[in-house]
Image 1 (tube, rainbow, N blue to C red):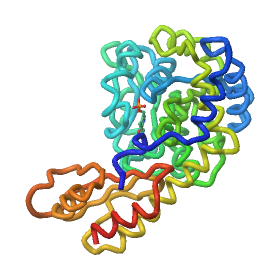
Image 2 (tube, helix red, strand yellow; image 1 turned 90 degrees about the vertical axis):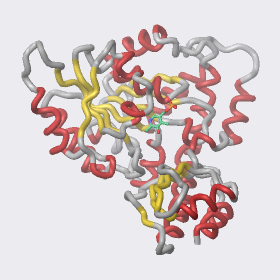
Image 3 (cartoon, rainbow, N blue to C red; image 1 turned 180 degrees about the horizontal axis):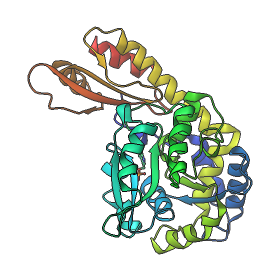
Length: 344
Ligand SMILES: *Cc1c(COP(=O)(O)O)cnc(C)c1O
């Protein structure tokens, strides 16, 4: 009964097999391996973006921070939500890699900005004197840190509002696959067609050992990214082992198959939770993350029975506490049903 996070799940066996297959003989280092060539071609094909520049790093923090560094001058500010991973969970890496750019927090009900909340944050900074930070890029996340998925027209509306002000848009897609599967849209629709300039395309949360792709739809940024990745210590020498994971991920749409499994597991969990009167769902659970609230006594019972999940409030005493539950590609119906029966 493991619902703590999707990065706690195993890597897919086909990814491990691909690594074993890659572990044969010699391959050129630093991203000029033949497998990287295929990964680049395949991602360009999947995203219908023949010019896009594609780079691999081992963590989502590196993907976000290095991508944003290429889009932000040190005296600018990045617009994101209060709960954004870049704000809450990256130990200041975006500020560090941008050379000290600020983050400005945008209101976001259910984790999603609107064109109006973005405008309310950006407009007071437009045309300001040298005393103020200057407006920089907007960074969105989908699946959001609250488990919701931006509808495509909502991303496009926010990106339009950004573009109207001359700002670029980055998408933190640590769970891009889950969002894409939830929307049933194409990768292009969830990125450049909706106005996204740069994408962190996640793999680790969805069945890889540790690889994320950074994709720039404007290839002019490629060289700067390459330099920043090396300077930041994130260029892998034995790069073929990153490429091999990503190649296996893309082959036969394994990335989407795994995301659909995770989302289906979460839908089963949500359906079960919503049948329980004493459980309240807190945000739209559009993909593979659900936030809910239920009696503290049941938190204790579930934890004691071995369920792993984050209780977001103290669980001693009476009353409700909030929980965050995440499903990964390997989640089984049997474990979900066991968990639900503990809460029933
Ligand atoms: C997990 C996650 C990341 C990447 O985190 P790392 O631990 O650096 O790999 C980025 N953004 C979001 C929204 C995440 O959930």
